[in-house]
Length: 196
Image (cartoon, rainbow, N blue to C red; front, side, top):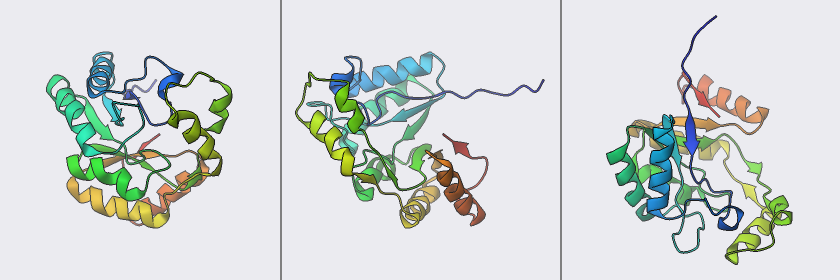
């Protein structure tokens, strides 16, 4: 039997869940840092990181919100840092790229296509909301497209690859695998590929 290595990646907060969905969702820089360090101590080799507004838990790509937890994680862990370029589906590409261009991480996530990102079914699961933005944001996803065109992906690769950043290719359906093959064939990405 062939033996291989298992690499565990952990996203400690993400951008999909809202604060009302779990009291355990890390929101502040110290909560995100502690969750990331705990994941690394439990065996995660890669920590996939998003930031949130510490006042209301809303996903936020402001690099100033990333800096405090990145500093702590790097001091207390040797896990590979993976910064999101997905941010939240409602954000522009420019907004989503700010943390990665600021901190030039070892790894950045890269959604491999444009897609509908319907989070509105979660409205039926919860009724007691901590913040007004939560149900409004979930409801708005009925008419929301997460945009990552071929041009967006190419621009992102051309911008971040020279910084030394590698990618976690997020493939939500088979068409995203074909999109990734397109960029591999053009030499804009190189194997080995980290596909999620």
